[in-house]
Structure formats: structure tokens, C-alpha cells
Amino acid sequence: MKLRKLTVSDYFLILVNLVPVYGVWFEGWNAAQVFLVYCLETVIIGVINVIKMACVTLFVKPTDVWDYKTGITRVSGFFFIVFFIFHYGFFVFVQTQIFFGVSGIIDDSSIIRSYSKIPAVLGHDGLLLLLIFIAYYTLQTLFDFFLSGKYKQVTMIKLMFQPYGRIVVQQFVVIIGSMFLAVGFSNVFILILALVKTGFELFVNFERFIDKAEADAKRKMAAENKKS
Image (cartoon, rainbow, N blue to C red; front, side, top):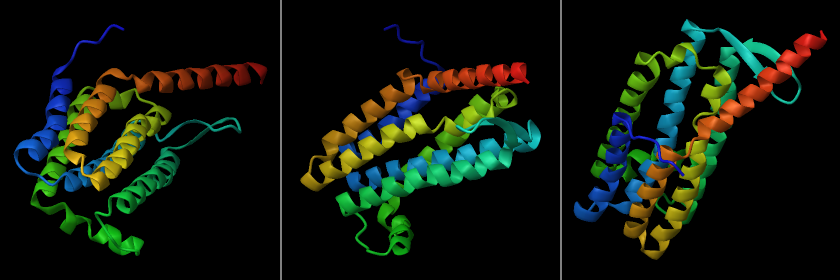
């Protein structure tokens, strides 16, 4: 398999993903707090994606094509945003609840109280790592999405599903990581997690599958228009 040439953004991605490894291995960071930050990374990605979708809806295209089993139609961009929030939010909820339950990092039977305890559980190191992730994804979005002009051409369907490839990997590694926390091998798994996560983001082209789905939808729409 031919590996693509790495960009400046890719090197920043590698650097950011190595920060928690360095912190846990050499600075004595709490591995449980780092895994909690990885859970919250999913939330960061979702919030930023909502902002991107809102900007596209407000400034580029108020409506876009929607094809969900029942046929092709045009709907408001805000429909995509609401659908994404509920659908993606469900994945985030499941991920965090499984992590809380397996790792025992937040021991509270109340769902509301368990989430309210997150800032205290993160501690200083966890909050620092969380801020690093927020800064990275904010700058990445600014340069790779807005300043590059991609926001002018992207479709809402593609934008809505972009985070899902990442969330599948994150859910898998975070849940497995919570098991490693329980048996005391968290430091080793932090390294494994960083390598797997970085490799997936660099070399697995999830957008190719989204593009194929979009192309199929366009062919279907063209066929429907031809019939009518």
C-alpha cells in the first residue's frame, strides 16, 4: 500500500497525540484522566462539527439533498444539524457511560451527577490536555476547513458523517482502554492507543466511503429526475 505524503497538519496531529503518552510515561500524569480526555475529545469533535454545519447553512447553502431510504429531497441545513446532534450525541452518551462503568473513574449512579463530576476528576493535567485538544481542533478547522475554502464546496451529508469514522475508533480504544485501567496496564495501552488513533487518522480514508455514498445518491437523483 502506498502511503500518502504527510502534511504540516499531519505532523501537528502526530505531536498532539504524543502529548498524553509523554505525560503519562515521563511526567506522572494519571492515565485514567487521560482516557477521560479521550472520551471528551469525541465531544469536542462533535461541537466543532455542529459549528461547521451551522456556518455552511447560514453562509453557503440553506438547504441540501437528503436521502434516507425514503427517497431524495431537499431539506433545511438545520435539519442536518438537529439530526447530527441527536444521533452523534447518542454515540457519545453510550461511550461515556460504558467508560464510567468499566473504569470506575466516576462512581455515581446518577447520570446527571456523573457528568457534573468530570471537571473535578480531570484534575490539572487532564484539563491541560483537554485545552491542547481544543486548541488543536480549533486551529485545524480554521485552516483546513475555512481558510482553505472547503466550506464552500462541502455537502451537508458529507459534513454530517465525517466525524463517525473517528468516533468508531475512539469508542473501541477507549472502552478497551477502560479495561486496561481496571487491570493496571494503562501506561502500555496509552501508547497503543496513540499509535492506533494516529495511524487511523493519517492513513484510513473514511471520506472515500462518504464520497461513494454521495455519488450513489447523485446517480439515484439523476435517475429519478429522468423518470419524471
